[in-house]
Length: 417
Image (cartoon, rainbow, N blue to C red; front, side):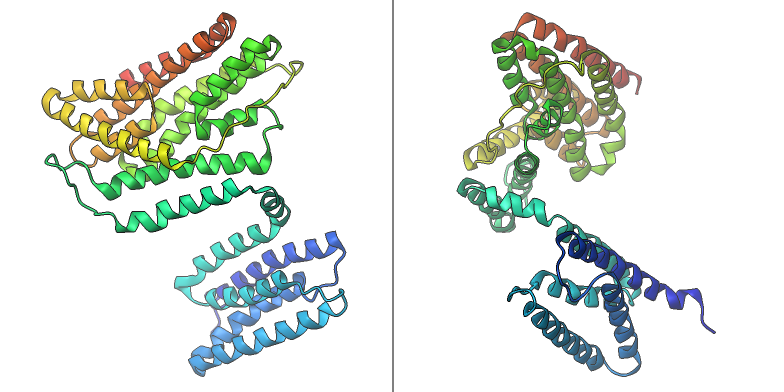
């Protein structure tokens, strides 16, 4: 007797085909192209893959191989014939998408591969749908951007696997692979922020620049905005708003690092940094964002990925890790808190990574959470100082209206929890 579970793989397959087919049909209509396959065809292709996988169970595994080969040949003939009607232009992307849809339909028949098929269908559709954006980015990519991408790949995929995965110091703290992983993680966050700025542009407003700039360096955004205000006082409200948004972006960035490294302390840290983020964003919109203010020029962030700064961060991270370990040994929790305050003067990523790592072994979760919060507060005070030193007194006063309540809320939540 047939049950719903028997139909479930075919329903999933139809949805996968419809998802990819919708994007292909939309492109054909948008660009007025003559195509081989649209919504209906891609839906049937996915269903064909599922049926072939089903029939292979009853006949032999060779059946699915023969079916896949025959279908690939059919797709090749179809798109080659269509190219003769489009001045010899072969739509290779759609041909490959059709073959992938057949494979996804086959995968959806198996219980342990169904989720993978759905996830890949979403990714494939996203790749197809972002054609204009990716083409525009590639057309504007510079030699420096390409080299930076290769550097990122070398750091993550070439150097990392060959590093020893065990501590090499007497205190059982400095693990080369672990340290390098943190360098890659921080570099990747900055690199992604830079790529987003290159794709979307910084002319969409200082608010977008603040969010994306916060991914790269909120301190750099603060310095740039303070300098800009000193030169153009009419940009004061927008510059304060961008500085606040960039600083508030720092807290989710720290939470993301902790979530990746040590999920056990993430929920304990969330109320503290989350409350500071909410207060900062709310005050920025409440007091400082005015529609009549000129948007002004957005911050032109330089490429954040260079080998020397990345290596410098690795050394800094190792020093913070070792200092925190020694401080916790000889001075207990007080030493750990002192180390976090000192580290927060320069960078919050290193202390976040260090404390989250040490919380797995030598530090209690509460101590690590408090140390990370203190580092965030210290770094916020540093940016407040930069606002006064690099900018104007009025700029510093406006920033203080936002940052001081953020700091107070962070301290209160830390004491109460």
